Image 1 (spheres, rainbow, N blue to C red):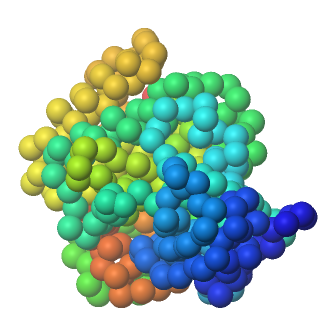
Image 2 (cartoon, rainbow, N blue to C red; image 1 turned 135 degrees about the vertical axis):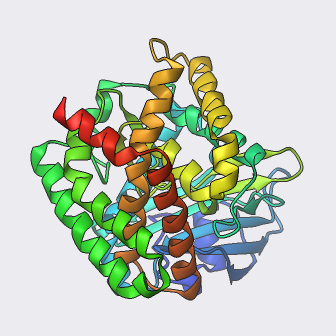
Length: 358
């Protein structure tokens, strides 16, 4: 089995010979079934048999491939490059819980991509539409601190080539501001009839502030997941643990953006209002366990409020440039409704303008 393994372009390419090459064992039979709800990637559970399977080897694996929509595959190749770089260069340097990876490869600038991971059954994917309770939110933000804390303000992030959104300069901020406007117009054009009028106005105001928001961002920074939400968490009911997946939107910026994006999109507004102070405090405490000092709880809370613009930015960009599905439309509507309410509850636009004018 010498030579490099080929790239499966779809589920038909996940064969016994291919998996034998990747795993380094003799695989006799595979069964491949699609699962998950990825918008920009295709995910399969692979059940395999091998007469020489090691005792510790699982009987099932998860294989992630690029989107089977060729137009989407080309548009999001940058995201596949980011995920490959995360598992190759970053995962072992931080403390965020991630799956065991058996194989990760990329070619053709990211249009060819494959990721073979451990299957974490009985863990189940979080449900973005339903949202979560405060206990799951606390587990999620403590896991997030494991990404941010170990390399908090590490200057190496400023040169990290795989970031889909590096820490901004004026040109980058201007470009993202323009892109946010296009994505917002696209989102409202497709879904606006199902949105509350107040939310449409909030989205438009948010898009107009993206450039100044990025330039006014406090000096604190880390690597960001960029799309930290329930659909990208696997939750194990047996031990109340979470595992984080889908590293296609790596960014470098204010850590509070990941925190705000999660709480504002994954908690129903009434539940968020009741618990967000305590959950943000749990995140801050976890950061301290990872060695973050000289960062007060007040600063953490302000960064959370400031970071809420991450919700309309990432949600509209994701919607505008990925394949449409009925569930995807419902998910985006739910995320934007919750996020717009959080922006208004925390008067984030006034906070951003105040920092811009300072």
